Structure formats: structure tokens, C-alpha cells
Length: 340
Image (cartoon, rainbow, N blue to C red; front, side, top):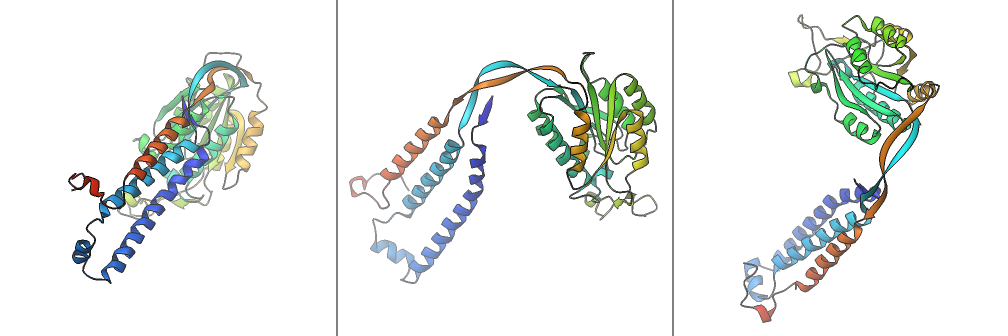
């Protein structure tokens, strides 16, 4: 397994475009200053040893050394020893609504983006649990099966968008049924689902299926996202500002809070409305902590081999080559045409 020991230093790469812009600006300014002295072709004849290509090459050597240096101080590492670790946790299936109504902007930046932020925070808090991801709209699909690798869950979460489910709608009942089949067969392990949706259930069977899940020992929690007042759904891809119905009226999507509450109540879980604060995550975390935990076995890398020395050698070699490249032509190699 690969990782960086100090990944915060990778932010230095954002300074590289600025460095390039400054270099280009200084070269343009230098060229204008030289042009004030006379014609460039004439000036080159007066300075036959001058080599602009060499100065450009020296800069790119320095630039490459800086990039390699950033990787070096970020400390690249490879896992070399795998250990079996036991943690106390539960099995948690997260189902996220990816229907077009989740693009409404009554929460910032929009419902789906805010839902992903909330779930990312929840996954961080539930790092001892086994987590699965389900996406649903008119149909439901397993995005990631049950795993103790919560970091992979966050990576999958970031890739979620409405295009993953081509059939539109909000089949919450189907998502719950699929979630039920995603759990392990371990009867001793506590199981829970977290559904984040705007509650516009088009299937109409979610309440009954949630009740069946509760009887099977699975707690169904619902995070409602959006507002009862509603918001139009952006539809820039259709050449319009907002989605419209067949009569040309703007479609307003509203949070069906009553439906969401009924699903959570039937599923023996918690309903909470998600907003722009972290109150929903805190309430859900407290509720999940009430479940009895079980032993979860997972593999983890306990030792990492440092690889920054490789980049240190790369930096050293690049700088040595840069030193050996003269700014002007060397008369000893006047007949060598490396830079044509």
C-alpha cells in the first residue's frame, strides 16, 4: 500500500503554476529591456557566446528539482508489513439518493454535494465500522460492498453523481431491500442503514420495507436533505435554467419530511434533517453509538518503508546536471551541436 507520510506538503504543487507565470513574465520583461538597446539579431551577433536555450534548459532543471523535492518532503511510503487488527464496530450500509432532484440548491452548494460532505464526515467518525455504499434513484445499485476500508468508501463517495443511475425516480424501498442483502450473515453483529434523501419516494413501499428491516434487526435511519419550501432543479444540460414539466412549468422539488419520518419510525431508527451545520451528523453519531458493537477483523499495514531517499537522489542528480550546464556556450565544445 502506498501513502505519503506528510501529505500536507503536496499543496506546494499549487505554487508551481505561479512559479511558471513569474518566470515567463520575467523573460518577457527581459526581452523588452534588451530590445530597447537595439535589434535582437544584431545584439546576438555582438554576443556570440550567449545561449538563451541553455538558460531555458537550466530553469527546467530547477523546476524539475523543485517538483521532485516536494515529493521528497511529502515522504512517500510503501506498506511492508500486514497485520490482522480487531476493532469494535457495527455494519453500516449508507444509501444516497442521486436523483435529479438532489441537484436542487436549497442547501449549499446543492443537496447532493452537501449529502456527500455529511456522509464523508460520518465515515470519518465510523472508522471502526464495516461500511457499504448504495446509490439509488429510480433503481438501486451497490456502489461499494461491505468493507472495513473506510478510506476506500470516501473515494467511492466522491465519484457519486446522478449519471450513475440512468433511471430517474426515488425508489427508497428498493434501496432498503438491496441494503438488507448487503449485510453479512453474522447474527451477532449490530446492523444499521443510513439513507440520505429528499424523501420523494416514487415507489410507495418504503415504509413497509423499513418495518420488515426492523423486524430483521436492521435499524433504518433517514437524513432528510432539502427544505419543505423546495427549490427548482438546475437543468443547464438541457439548455434551460431549470427543469420544467411537459406544460412548461418550472419543477420545484420539496423535501417530503413526513415520508422520511415515517420510514425512520417504521425502521426503528432516527430521522433528522440535514442542513449546512454538522448537527445532523452529531445526532446520528450519538444514535449509532447506542448500538452494541461486535468484533470486526481487518487487515492493515503496520510498517511502512520510506522512499524519500529515491527522490533525494533525483534532486541531487538534477541539480548536478544543472550546475554543469553553462549559461553561455563553452569554447571547448564549440563544434558540438547539442542545442541546434
